[in-house]
Length: 347
Image (tube, rainbow, N blue to C red; front, side):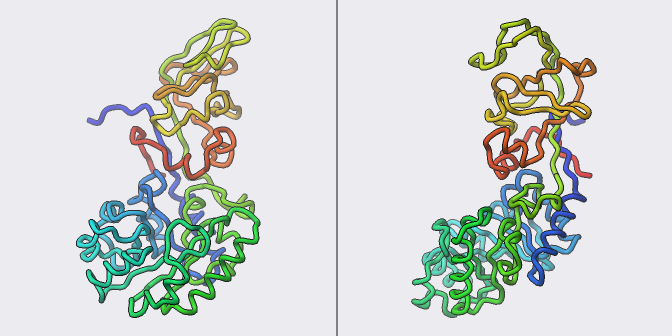
């Protein structure tokens, strides 16, 4: 018998698939893949892959070889790419893996040529992100000559904004890709897909929007919430006027108030940015978080909710755009910091 967990993630598999299908439609004739790094953005990569593969997704992306290994055995009907490429310690494992490295540096290219010259790979070209990727000079110098390149990639730096840099990167990538004999080209993440089909090329790589995030206004009304966060009430208590709540006494009651203390805190990814700004859904209304979020506990004012008792379950407002506004955290951070103490259940 498994011990009781006072935290739950309710994950809507139908919404996950619906989000992918909308992103696939927006990708036009390009194939639509899925970024499943960081354990499927915190919700369970194996489940994400299984459901999206059944829906027709055939291209998946992780960050590291450890993440790739966690998804084995891998089906030959889909491809798996490792975005961070090939460290020296990865070479023997990568050479035997069905996953492909995304080569980012001249040294990674040299390692792959030596380890598995007959095997296909992917390649990242830097067009302005200045994070990972080979340079235009590397391409012109013939560094990639003779490689079996499945997918040539780049990455938009400002896809969630309306700036000239997006079109500049698209044009630079188009020009560079004409000099590289790759089977497919890929530039767009979730935000890039929303910029239009001119950014889709042959393959798109959505992440955030799959999991309920809204990368740009074009996605509003089309992307559904995937994750609901619920926490159990540890205690209901009363505080008097002028009494303070939580560490550093950042909240003082103006009057006698009723509190519910929830079994959730920053160790569970409900970070301190929600202190005095977060909220919890109770029926058709919201109750505010009061005081500072601590490691394992969060206080909520429940004056208007006499039905909330010890042992009750409450849903935190984790609609990603509104939770981001409350906390000051990005939608990406909200998902990927969800901890291991949750009971994850799929519907």
